[in-house]
Image 1 (cartoon, protein in one colour):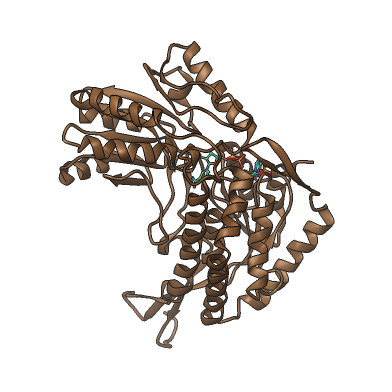
Image 2 (image 1 turned 30 degrees about the horizontal axis):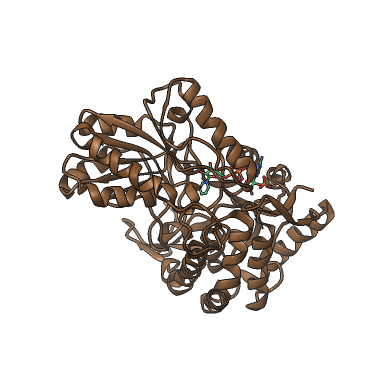
Length: 460
Ligand code: NAP
């Protein structure tokens, strides 16, 4: 059975789920299509009222929902509670601002009057990852339910109880059947759904392979896709940075969510005048982290999301060391049951070594020493990914100069890459395309219809 809750803290199987049959999936798509006929005609006020109810229920159930996240993918309990609040904030944000974002945009054509009207396009399929089981869903579902689209969510197979809990929240809030539906199916069945003529657009957050599979199927049927894929975020430390603060943020940037964030800081790049001080302090802080049970509020680093993820990361470290990388800290699995990996720093990296070329998804940092700012920028851009980078400097002008030359979807000055409801999120290069969150996120799956009004005249 591929859909299971396996507690990564102990690697014990807690619950298994039967996948939906093809007939059940077909019925769910039919219901979403039928629901669209009605949902598209409801008012923004009705849509906003529903979303506010979902957000309120989420806040009310914060403690139990956060425990579910921790059980299924090992997030620290306090961070799980933070994720629930962030998700509710996103839902409230679209409920509060959606009508304004979707108001007609007047145009100024040379002749006549014209404007853009935004209208929903139909049923959407969202394929979501396990690393932020509520937040990732909120980013897609809230703006699109506000627009008047209906949403099918295929969630990651290792977080089925979170997926069901989200659907239950929508039901409890009084969502009409078919407006929000959880599809309990495995990833290998998801891409084929893009060919269904009732599904009008697809969105995937996850790996490059899954993104390419879903988007190519959607492309074959001429449907729009949005992809939020991997990242290899650089964390650049310039000569004039406040090193102690940079180190504090470097630790947060690397181990937030047990290191399993697409926007985690993964490549630490320091100019040589401050490299030794930064590295020594960074190593010291990482080495003192309390690793253990994510339900214990004193724990600072929990397990990875699954045994398979921990095995893959340990293997990536081993391949890198075999190819010449040096281990400055950690480098091994923690000796205990569960999917734990030691906080790790690797140095002496160059092209051809696994961690130079691949995304690191877990508590492993790669460190690079560079001559100057230009070398830092060149190294940051030497990546197949382009999600978010950060630069630490006390000179904001210089930070802006660096930001201008970085080829990513997001650049943060004096903070690791981060997220909130009103900031757009998305990448360049192999990190995907399209944007979620902010006003940009609500305009991805709408028909931006031109309406032109002319004075009635004789044809020329
Ligand atoms: P993954 O294997 O791609 O899984 C993500 C989702 O895609 C899951 O629901 C999965 O279902 C599904 N899936 C797998 N194969 C598929 C296929 N061939 N067609 C359609 N759907 C398929 O990703 P992961 O390795 O678990 O997650 C980590 C990756 O996601 C990292 O690269 C990370 O950077 C990226 N990520 C990006 C963002 C962002 O916003 N840019 C956010 C979070 C994570 P199953 O679970 O059933 O296999």
